[in-house]
Length: 61
Image (cartoon, rainbow, N blue to C red; front, top):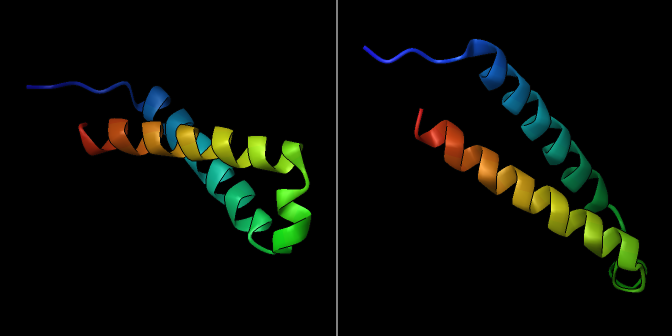
């Protein structure tokens, strides 16, 4: 029987929710404003990677 560390799963889910919220918030940014901001682009890249990794881990638990 497999055992999971519930605290780690809870933390991962919390991080996924935060990443999703950040990504959703950036959706409201206009295209030109978004593309002219390296910080916004970097934020999307980081949060997207975090979201994808977390989704992958949760998908295999």
